[in-house]
Length: 168
Length: 327
Ligand SMILES: Cc1cc2nc3c(=O)[nH]c(=O)nc-3n(C[C@H](O)[C@H](O)[C@H](O)COP(=O)(O)OP(=O)(O)OC[C@H]3O[C@@H](n4cnc5c(N)ncnc54)[C@H](O)[C@@H]3O)c2cc1C
Ligand code: FES
Ligand code: FES
Figure (tube, each protein chain N blue to C red):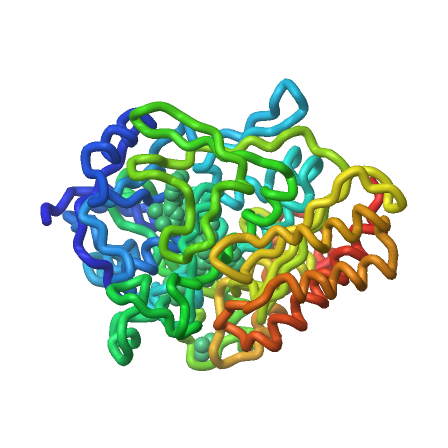
């Protein structure tokens, strides 16, 4: 099966890669680009550890996407979330609030939370549940995860110049 | 799990896509969001020679209000796009709710309306990895004349779990199917077959390009029960619509989903409501009739005894909600 050259921008870096049509975005990220922060779990859409963010910041399940469909597009993986030398507020708050146990789900949870906070820095309980339902942690009870997300939202609101203790 | 090998085609226009479907016939499979198809391919339930992706076809992605007050939805609209549509939420809240209940945000970002309507039927024995399936004989869906669920069955009983299907029937919607030979409109109530293998009336070379919703009439509700609120396919769904007052309904349409290979129109229950109005007593009778009319309840994800009780509870709750709903 003939491979096809695609241009894929990951975390701002443009890559030209030869991919077979049956390679998933997840396989290309991990196996071709050695970006192993994005995890391989169920490979069937139901755990969310493979979540990356698409062009609009939306949550994308990389295990259920064909790499060829991403030709000419750009995405962000957990390796691209950090802001210079500092962690992104979501990462920082996951650390501070111990929202991590074994850490396997963490990249997927971070990318799912970021997809939410990028468009909504005052998420309600319902908004958080909705955004995180597709990303499952096998260790924590999701409670600390949700605390971390609310705390990260506060930081992001402060940055926007809004009130720190809003509804979240 | 890895995907099997295939040739990938990415038409830029509908015409180009239809030509590809005509050229490759049974060797071609349509892909939209891929959120179901790619998983079935990983399971080796689908091993197409040509995978025709319609994701670049812009003409299938529009939400268009119609002059008569109805709405037309392109099959390529993602469920997120539809969930964010104010006109859909305002005019057809039950459909909006049904689409919003699909999977998770992650899934809805990729999933499309067309893929949801055409969603393949599912069965607990078959929608599993190849290794798992190897431990027993094949079935109607794979390579055998056998159903593991109902041993005496002469056809496949896999479940239609599309969340949109029951509501679309209640809303009197129709789908537009296109092929190189032209287009035809089919009411959603006539779109499905009661057969898990050949579960829609779509013909070789056809694709579902859009849905037409007539102007909203009366009130409608959608109810879904699943093991978890997020992510899970339904254990049972129920859509109900009523035109006219609770006391003197002009028409009633009740449809159950995820109970068999096709959405099940509950004619007996609807007749009860139509004759005696929507009240506590008729709701109870209609719920019992719903349970009775399902006969062999063929869902394998839960035992059938559970399913029968679930059907009654779902119908009762949703009809109560419908009664109290103001327009
Ligand atoms: C974790 C998870 C949870 C899910 N939960 C739900 C749920 O709660 N409810 C639910 O209904 N679904 C659920 N799904 C299934 C699926 O994601 C949705 O039904 C989705 O809407 C399918 O759309 P798609 O565009 O991804 O379809 P695809 O996967 O691209 O296609 C699905 C099928 O439809 C055919 N097809 C696609 N588009 C067309 C078209 N335009 N014309 C003709 N045939 C077409 C394909 O050939 C294929 O057979 C879930 C999936 C996952 C992974
Ligand atoms: S690995 Fe993609 S959802 Fe589980
Ligand atoms: S920390 Fe172990 S899976 Fe989430």
